[in-house]
Each structure stands twice: as C-alpha cells, then as structure tokens.
Image (cartoon, helix red, strand yellow):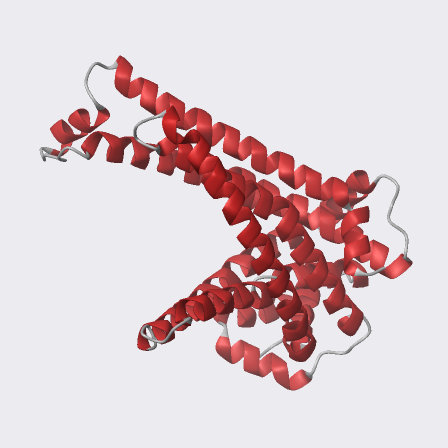
Length: 314
C-alpha cells in the first residue's frame, strides 16, 4: 500500500489526534476565559497585584500582558500533557499499525486495539524514542537557526524570506521524523533488543539520505500549499472574531488554534505516513553501514549513549 492509501485506511488515528488537539484547544480557551474573568472579579487587575509583588510599574499594557503570560504558562503545561506525551503514545500506536499494514498488506480490523497492544508490548522503547525525539528537535532547531543567519546575509535579495521559510519546513520534515521512522522499523523487525533496533534504525535513516530528501521534498511542496490555504482560512476566522473583544485576544486565539488543530492532526499525520512508508520501502530488508555508527556517535553523545544501552561499544 502507498502512503495515501495507508493514510486513508488508518484515519481513526488521525481523527483521534484531531480530537486530542480539539481538547487541548478547548481547555486552553477555558483557561483564557478564567484568567479574564478572574481579573474582572477581583476588582483590581492581575497586573496591579503583580506590580505590588514585584514593586514595579508594569505600565498601561500590564493588565493584558499579565493575563497573556498566565494563560501562556498554563497552555504550555497543557500542550506537554496532551500534545507531547499523550500525542506521542497515540502516534506510536499509529506507527505500529502502519508497520503491520506495510508488512502484511492488511490493516488490522480493530486498529486502535492493535496499536494499543503493540505500544504496551514495547512501552519502555517508546520512552527511549521520546528521548531521541527531543534530541532531534534540538538538532532541527539548530539547523533552522543556521538558515535564519544565512537569511540575514541576503535580507536585501528579493524572495529571500520565502526561500528561508520553505527551507526550514523542508529541514523540519527531513529531520523531524527520524524517531517515527525508527519506531516503525522497530515494530516491523520485532527484535528483542529495543536499543539495538533504535540504533540500527537511526543509521539506516541517514544511510538512505537520497530517498529521504526526495520524500521530504514532495512533502514540503504539499505542506506549503496546505499551509497557505490554512493561513487564508485562519485570517478569515480572525476577522470574524475581531469584534468579540477589544483586546483582539479571542480572535487571535481562534485563528491560531484553528491552524494548530488542523496541522497537528490531518497534515502532520499525512507527512508522518509519507516519510515512514518511504523509509520502510528502502530500509526494511537493508543492513546498516558499520562505518556510520562511529560517525553518528561522534556527532551525538545521545546516539553514543544509545549504542551503550544496546550493548555496542564505541
């Protein structure tokens, strides 16, 4: 089955991610309302209370800024619980189903139960990949910052901002799905050594860089088109809610969270399936190149630590 077919046939997982994102947005919205109501009910602004504690004048923008900071802190906590941790385990179940369907050509009839069992069987491994995910996020962030520095050197060149933005999306797709591809291959191989599977999968991911860049290029073009459409719709939503509150916060909230909910569920799921199926096609029966272990260990202390857990001395 190709990526689009697998994406459509595993839609229950995409819809589950959509529901999780909606729940996150709803709780964040409730938190915003609570902050605004709390400020009104106290008779004094939260900014005034904070000013007393800090013994500093926050200025005329203090009330709005304080409400925003309190809401933002709570939203970051909610995001970690719902989008990062719970979302990651849900994504792991999705990958288990995709790997099974790729190997057998059949999607399990009760795919949610199948994915849950697969994740429970290898639960410790999922946490190992969570650590790898954070490491790769940091690497992608550094690359994106490098692109931003290049952009500053060519800021007067027409179209430089567009090229930089597209390049950052490409890097995010190309390097941001290493952990997902590794986990999918581990489900495919079903080895007893989770750390060895993880290390082998990372090596195979970078070993197939040509296929990786090709799939990332296709996904980048599709994402740019979808992001543009989402951006237009988000702006329309923002305009519709502008009269709801003079601060403009409800309008901005509605527009931003509409974009986040659609992207984090439907678009990100398709990109994940696209990258994973492309990786499995090239790597499922391939042996890792021995010389890449040393190279990657030299670039990453975390990869070296992964090799040590796998029983490979480097």
